[in-house]
Amino acid sequence: MFDAAVKALSQMVSPPFRSVLLKSVAVALALVAIVAVVLYRLMVWLATVGADWSETLLGGGAHTAVSVVAWILSVAAGLGIIVGAIFLMPAVTALVGSLFVDDIALEV
Image (cartoon, rainbow, N blue to C red; front, side, top):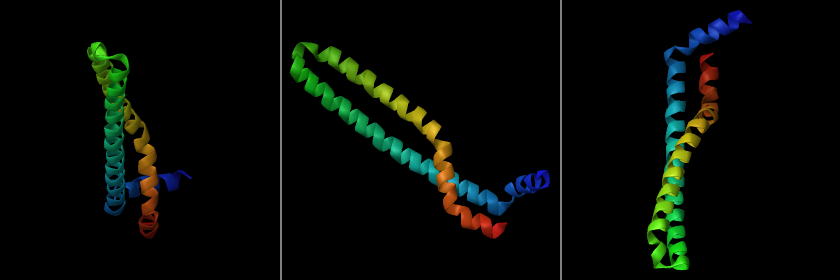
């Protein structure tokens, strides 16, 4: 078992395996970035629409308070998306890496 683990680790730095790893990471990073941008745009749009709705509901006197709350929600959504992307990156990389299993099997 240890011999197989040592052989696997030594093959990990070989050019074919490294290229599959880099392709997996690049595709996963692009996928996570696209999802993050779309979610961020959606959250900012929802905060803007919610601010407009609450301003019409509360009246013009609450414009400053509503703007501050909308800004805080936008920043919180951005930070939440960044943290979520960091936690999802290993899972997405593994999912994308499974698409390249045939390339790895050919090399082994």
